[in-house]
Length: 193
Image (tube, rainbow, N blue to C red; front, side, top):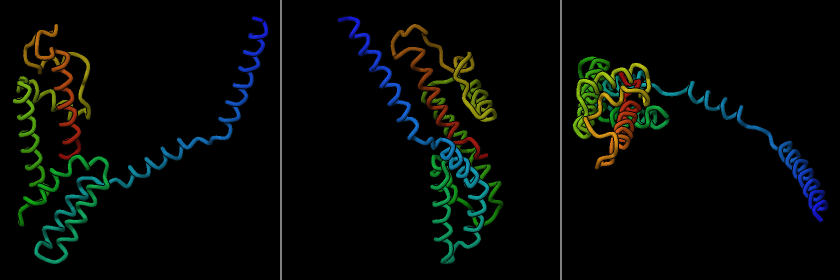
């Protein structure tokens, strides 16, 4: 009968709640442990200053047998850092180009400035963005540490186009592509200069 179905459903729901409570009680949360481990890794994280110190050491020992070990140490240091992994090609190219005289920090700043300008110019050219507005937009994003995805700032750098999807994917698709490229650019150069 309908009443028996309701009684069985009620009994089922009671048993279900009891078993869920028991199943949850047996599990221990490891979230606090994971957060602690992540914070511990962040404290030991390698930064650009450490890499530049290794570059200076490598430059001073260039020609010795020790230089290969220092170069390997630079690569290991980059690989062990979550924030420097996507910058590996930049750092290794700098190590290959560093001169035997001059200040490493000054050379680094000039190298990064040139790379930033070249890669941003490539994005501007590829996406046909407004150069001056894009420069200002990216400088603010580098200063603030994030690309603003809302508001009119992004729209101001985009080339003139229809907002209503008139061919070529439309405004929304162009905005998404540009934001994606600029986010990768920001992630790549944030914290290097």
